[in-house]
Image (tube, rainbow, N blue to C red; front, side):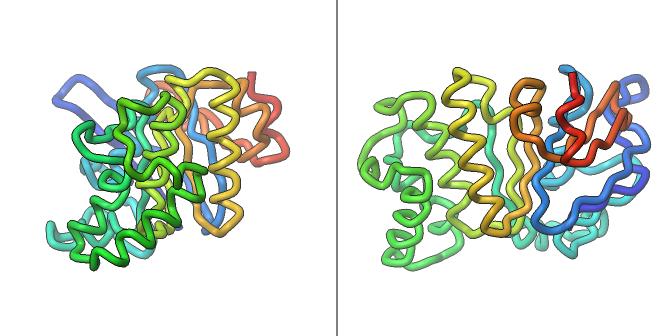
Length: 228
């Protein structure tokens, strides 16, 4: 599903964000990407989302070779991806329904199907009753669940999450991770970037560790408890 081969990312002549990163993630896996601030986690996710291009190496995702994709092909790649950010990135002047259905509207999906799919997605996160609310009327945890519903509305093959629990208290963080686990149980490949080691220890999933832009470790699921 996701393969990185000798991937590097350089900003200018001085700053190396990633260097010789190699790993493979099978379809349906749940993987944590961890490391201290500045380790390269967000950069790696931006490469997977094709927001940025690697300086070297090759990335394959869901059957696509990202480096050789044309600009016209990028939207088709992104339809296979759901992306969740730490700061939610909800549009405050839009209702919950409008935020979740926005990508479907851009794709030209009929309004009746937008309603059906947005309701289904919001029901998955337990917020179907908030369709007409606005983001600022919701709690932080609810806003994050709306962001997750938006990421899921297009039935993505891969869900990428960048520090999705960074602004939440421990109980809400565990609630969000349990939701990701249910999504993964339905067949979606999940990659979560986080520096929260307590969360990683509780979840017992495969863990990829970055250190100054390089792969520091790759721990299979049963061994994830040793991350300290």
